[in-house]
Amino acid sequence: MKKRILVIEDEPGLIITVTDRLEKEGYAVHSARDGHAGLSLGTESSFDLILLDVMLPGKNGFDVCRDLRQRRVQCPIIMLTARGQVVDKVVGLKLGADDYVTKPFEMIELLARIEAQLRRTTASAVASSNEGHHFGEIMVDFRSAEVTRAGKQVDLSAQEFRLLRYFIEHRGATLSRNTLLDEVWGYDAMPTTRTVDVHVAWLRQKLEQNPRRPAYIVTVHGLGYKFLG
Ligand code: CA
Image 1 (cartoon, rainbow, N blue to C red):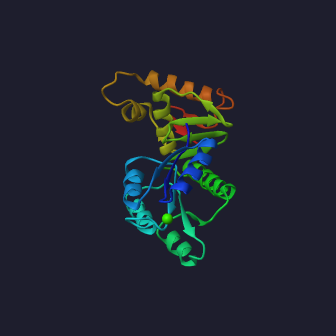
Image 2 (cartoon, rainbow, N blue to C red; image 1 turned 60 degrees about the horizontal axis):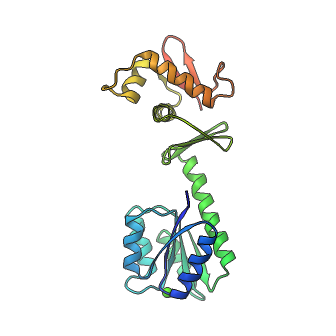
Image 3 (cartoon, rainbow, N blue to C red; image 1 turned 120 degrees about the vertical axis):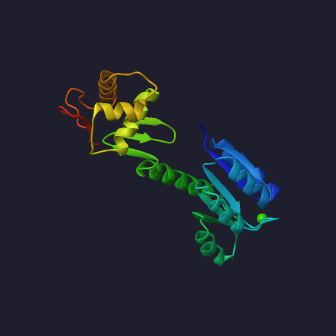
């Protein structure tokens, strides 16, 4: 999946230069030429990062930045400021921008800033419990429903993923088979407690170093399971 970048900038020459280079680097690039268009596009569609010029027709970059954040757009925003606008940095960061680059800039510098922001968001997404979880060699990303083990993709069925997520969200708690059935499978299905055991065994096969002596999804005899990751 290509990372999506939105460029909100009114100078046509700069849009072309930046778009060309970012596409060569493998990004999918969209652009808007004024503040209102940028705000609409940035709100309606989801991007991995936004490049936002300060001096824009219609609505300036500071207002766009503030409004994007108010509308719960959480991707990194890098502001593009003119040389000498020292105050811009402080104002921009206060309004929710993550970084700024002063014009004129070298593309190599802009690329480095973009990569730094994207790396930071990937790491924090996985570290934050709402969006993912990390244990041992395993990384679980709730948003993309992807699991990796030592960097390699692990294929989980949708049901296995739901079970794993439930375990992670209730780590440390002893969970009975009946609780897991109710919470993970729901009432409309007709599984038995044996179904839970089978899925736990599959998860162990895929995630544990030694599935016969599990370190993460442990059996609590007579009660159920406990997740210790
Ligand atoms: Ca401008």
